[in-house]
Length: 246
Image 1: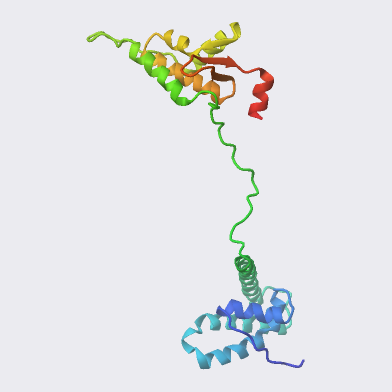
Image 2: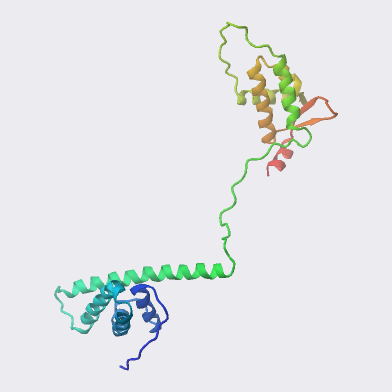
């Protein structure tokens, strides 16, 4: 077999050198390929000994493995277990290291190509998370609702000093059900009326939160026909509610 010398560009470490030798021979990463490029690796190592004698430890380890692999490849095999089995393990380990190194090198080359092409981002494969719907207050501002709630709070008397106050158990869910029951009986409900029916200051706040939650879920709409007029709460028809949420 005619031997020829391969001139290689700069490389990083013994695995990089070994992989480039195999790729120049157009071989797959196998123990057979390792045996075939052993001589070329040793020639390259001899050149490195003259230039970088302090940085050869890793190269020498790989060189010893290659010599062991090539020696085993040239010797006849015995059917009984022998030290050659250990050589096969060395060959498999080195092949595995090279395969991993090659994979990382391919990924690094891909990232470098994308960087040179200005592709610094990747397309999101998963759909964007659905954001919670914002309350539709196009006809009535949040400030209008807060102002009415503040008026109701100012009018609602606080508990007398020294009186033991029992805990209030009204919840937003219960107040939502209360508002929807009223809307099932009539076309609309006046927001001020709802607030005036609250038994205490906490219930006023819960009523405001319940209305905002209904607006957010597109179950009701609010409107104010005139400046400083009454705020009217209306139940949305099922079809309209479906269109808004879709």
